[in-house]
Image 1 (cartoon, one colour):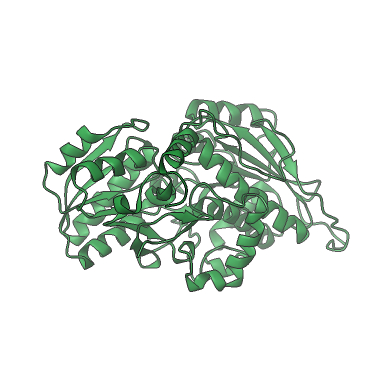
Image 2: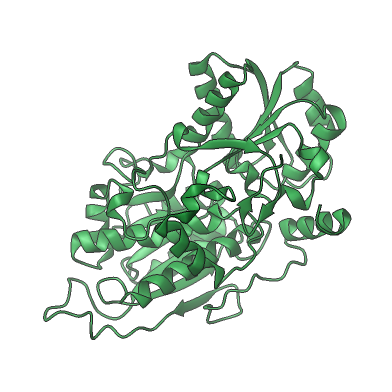
Length: 426
C-alpha cells in the first residue's frame, strides 16, 4: 500500500463525485473554462503540395462534446489528455493533409439533454462547420447525441462503447474508437470456463453502459453454457451496497462478475469484502478502469481478476513496441500520473489517428468526405500511430466499432495502477 489508505479513499471519492477535484493539468488547453478551443500551430509550408487537398482551408476543426464537470468529469479530463496528445503529435507531423488540428471542447456534464443542446447550438448555422465531431463519452451523452446527429454528413467518432451506436443504417456517419462490450463479455466467459466456474451473478452500477454490459454478458453466457443467476444494478453513488450484494449472493453464484465503468465500483468491492471475501470476482476492462489501489487494500483485492489489453499491464512486451512508446511519451506531457486506466487516453488518441487515416484515404479534409471512406479503413495497420496491435480490426460497412476479439484480452490478478498501467498483485 502507498501512503494512507484513508487518504487515498477520500481522494478517489472526491474525484468521482467531482465535488472538489481540481482539473488535471492539460498543458495545451487555451482556456481554464469548461468550454475551450485549443490548437497547436505548425508550419505546413514544407508539407504542402502545388494543389491543396479538397476541403483544405484553415485548421482541421474538431468539435468535442463530453463531460468537463459533474460526476464524469474525471473521465472527461483523462480522455481530453489523449486528444491533446494526439493533436500535438499530428500537428508536429504537419497536421492532417497540411491543416493543423483545432479542438473545440464543450462541456455536457455527462447529461444527454445538455449534450443535444450544445450540438444544436454549434451546428445550427452550419451543420458542416467542423471536419470531425467527437460526440459523447458513454451512453448518457453519446446515445442522445447519436440520434441528434444521425442526419449530419460529417464524420463522427465517439469514445463510447454502447453496441447500439454501431448501427450504420440508423447512424451512417457515426463510429467508435472503442470496442463494444461484446468482446469483453466473450473474454470473460472464456476465462470463467477455463477456471471451471459455471454460475455467476452480475453486479454493476445503475447506468446505461452497465445495462449494455449486462446484455452482452447474458448473450455470451448463453453461448458458453454459463448461468447468470441474477443481475443487480446498484445506485451509482451509494457508499454502501451491502443489501444489493446480499441479493446477488442469495442466488448462490460461484463468482461475481462486473462490467462497465461505474462510480459504484468502490462500494461493490467493499460489499464483496464484507459479505464474501473469498468469492472470486471478475471485472471487465471498463469496470477495472478505476485505480483499485486508491480504495482497496491488497487483502481486499485477493481473488479479484482484471480483464485488460496486454499493453496496459506493466511490464508486458507490447510496451516495447514503437506504437506504444510514441503514445506513452506524447501522453505524459499532458497527464504524467493518470487517475484512471490509460485506456482512457488510448481511445481518444486513436480517434484522431483514425480520422487522419480517413482524410488521407479521401484526399480531403471535408467531414462528409471522411465519412464516405471511413468504412474502407479496416485494419490498424492502415492507421499511422494507432495504439494497439497492427492486426486490430477497425471498421467495416456492417460494423462501426473497433473490432476487438475476446482472445485479444488477457486476465491478471487485481492490483493498483502505476501511471495508468495495471500492476498485478503476486
